[in-house]
Image (cartoon, rainbow, N blue to C red):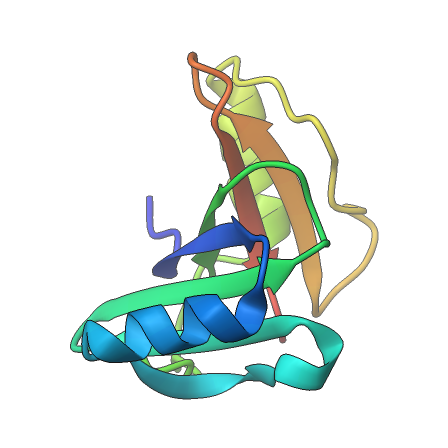
Length: 123
């Protein structure tokens, strides 16, 4: 199962303080808009998202259709197909992607310990 690029989305209290901290660890801006309280940062193949006031918990995020540089892949498994495969395996889908649509879409699941996982396709 190819889930796409991986990142961790962090729920931060002060996005500017978090940005400065991760810059000290060697992370650089990859995308986002700090004025809207979200920023994507990268160090090597490691990608983190900083999100202030957008959700309650840290979230593991997979992006079908992207590589670790947020560049489009020529071939990938659509988010709706991934959702169908996980349903067939008995995994509970918390928020479902509309299977009658194409293009961008997302769904959410949780691991056995309640850690949220977002499968988020942008194209």
